Length: 257
Length: 338
Image (cartoon, one colour):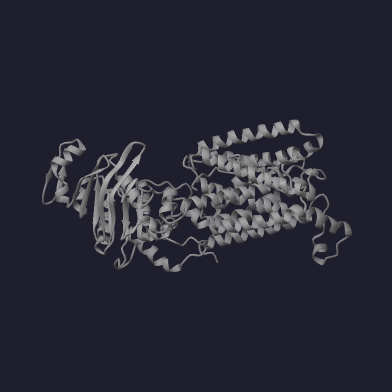
């Protein structure tokens, strides 16, 4: 039960944006993706999501190639949240979150999904904001709305009997500390229920604390991949980030100033 | 009932419907020649009154209804597609493109000489094709709507409008006197020259187009998250874009070919509808159709009554109302909450 990337490469012109990427996102695990700016983290997420095909290599959702799925089936299998989203018109918070419910694109709405929507709004403490115009919210509040939108797409109440995945690109970049931890705790709880999660992280210490596995990307290649203790090595990190770093074990912490 | 529409929106739609019915009733009764409402209901009409109702007022109101609904809905659809609150068939050059097509057909094809009244249908066809061409041109210039920055799209619209105006000007210059009479009519916009022969097929196409748009409205809502997000959510974005473009071009082309350029309806109507009860496209399309009808039929009545027995071009009336509203939008764009 996993999303698998096998020898995935992507080129634009004669530049390799991704080079020979091999990794798995497993159900019941949180994969943290780290790396300097422009290293290819977001591109990797785009390719895994199926936004555009890889130049070479293969991406599997379970045992099938990503192209064997219809768009709707992909949407039911994995949910994606980008770094930035701008809504031009005045939708309410509830309407935006509701857009994550897949497949209801006709003129009728299925009332069975109302509970799921309600649960997610409560989970992310958006209950009080639900009738507000999303454009009048602060950046952090908007980010929580989009996390809710991504989560409602694949969310199950008790556990995940079928494989489901959530791919997030720096989901907490605009959140205050309390909400950042709260969102990551929510993700951990979903992972425990069997959801597979990939998060592109900016903060190495949050990655160390919340990830089960880490992929360190540099120049479109995987520089290190495995358990947090293995990947967060002072020498590798210092080389890749170009900054002297110390790593202390138990608890695992990276310090760089 | 459509579940995507909430109570407040249903109520708003009901009020719009009522307004539309009122506007149409008044539009039928009043004009250069007033017809008693009671005599219509009792069926005791004089021969002249019947003649006026069936062959003048009837087609005129029907055309105003069609054009109002078509422009309102295509404005809403284009704004949703471009994710741009200032997209309007008039502002971004689609209407002018349609007019250029119609005018070209009048001047070059010598429509009166064609057999089987073929010419009558050629003008709308030329208008539809050229409005389609303009939308495709915008599509290419904005790199597939990716550069949907408001200023950029509007500047392109200004350029396209100017180009179309040059074309129309040249054609006016080389046209014969009798063609010129027809041309002047396109520039001003009027519901006066409606005849049932063209209205009936156009009516069905417009009704079908609006229903299709209402049916895919939910997907257009999801598009507001961005094209990539919509694709990830299972919406076939390319297909949807093509569909919205073709349907909008079809509606604008038909409207312009039958009534000339009626400005600002496509811009103002969707904004008013959003202001009153929300943004989702199922409600927005239905509301824009109904409010569009009220506004065009009302403007037509105004233009007939203002200097009766003479008549103002209706495009003048809608622009007189719409242009200040547009100015208001531009000034307040950053602060407006929709």
